Image (tube, rainbow, N blue to C red):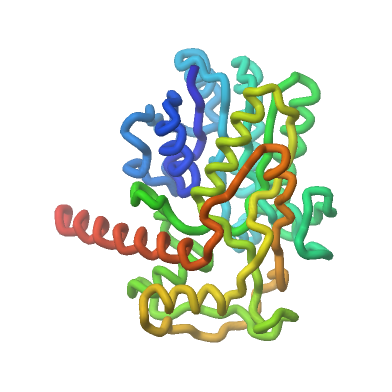
Length: 335
């Protein structure tokens, strides 16, 4: 029996693949490499270059690899891009997920874990935000993920498929063992961008607004280390294998850090000032969004280990240095 990890060459998916291999699981990674990086996939996993919407391919993998479970990461995740290309996001995140689900049901897959997002809440009226809050996404990205949640719920009700959807807050950091990290070009996540600035890949970091109703005037987010997020998937898998109920769970630490907090953490780690520039606020940015994550701890037995902003930043910065050295070496070989 094997686990299919879609998008397993991407940022979070590659961490998941490594964790599953360490657990002794048989892992099949399916990724079209639109944003993924093949060398981040563990050697012990089977890598398939293909698309989740290719039902013939997915069906053959389910049959030939005896896949009983799917952990679904594949999709597009940049909010401003979703505003510029809504149809592309609905196709990539929603339509293709529908095709994947159909192939899963036809193939007899029994358990499904879905990578959702806190963007389904939009601009929540309270902080922290819990799973029963109003779902009012303000971007095509958030709506595309919410639609997939609905499809998953309805499919499970009709077929008996067991599922967990995990709503991520702000994922950051890198594998403490240095095997993988966030490698996608044009990343927009604050800690990734701050670390790229710290190693000289960007001239400065933009601070999008300083007059929000927060303690220091900058936006507050709940930053969760990627390894803790992967651990939430592992506990969800154990939960479903044990006959646990399907459900939706927030993944965050329950406390937030401001943009200036992140800048200070980078400066503490590097020992030097980070070049920053003030920029206008971005439309739709909520002042603060923090997870109410007690449900995951209680129902799944999830116990985060890396709830420390300095550790998150240090791991992300170390990965950025490794990635820069690797890219330089590749350019030297191919140049």
